[in-house]
Image 1 (cartoon, helix red, strand yellow):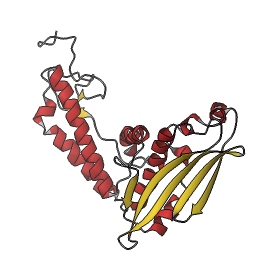
Image 2 (cartoon, rainbow, N blue to C red):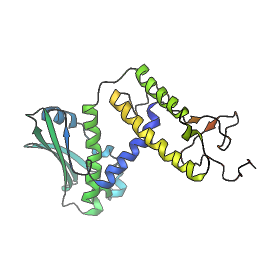
Image 3 (cartoon, one colour):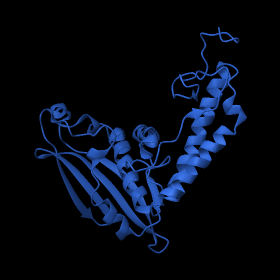
Image 4 (cartoon, rainbow, N blue to C red):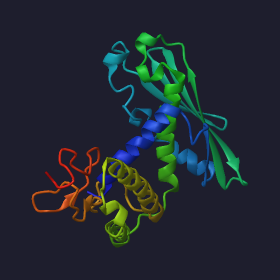
Length: 252
């Protein structure tokens, strides 16, 4: 499926947010929507949908099943995670009107509660880790809010076809002279995939919903130094070298 081609890209973004605990280097993001629209979009936010699905395994929190409460405190939306009668953590999204209320500055913060670590999910014991996960799900909800209308299949397919044609016409990508060249081509293709993702998102193409589109082809043109499939097609497989280092320059 088309969307599955970018699951690994989405995962990388999620991991980055998890590790950095930030919105592009800070805990704030300006969203092109009013505070009321942002508040409505965040009503169904669920921290359990963050990378690693935190708090979904009670065996990791002393058998205690956490409860989740959402409240409004002024301009703040507060998700309180309870462990029995104690507070495990408070997740806070501060919504500040910008540009006369046409936009909203969303600032994320986390407050650790008084619940003992033994009865709190590991992801909620460390404030920085929790903040990274909270930012990840916030970003997901906000991205969905401001995403452009879904494009039609033909538009998305043309973007993919143009991408494939550009790769086929790229002589450098088709030539694999040595190991260094192969690694360089891999890095170059990664950058091209990142640019493709941005173009598809801007056009409103679905990225990971299992839609009807085909995945981006990794098939490349013939090359005497690149490994081939039984039917003679040359393929690039992520994580594998594009040349067979067990053979010399004459293919032996």
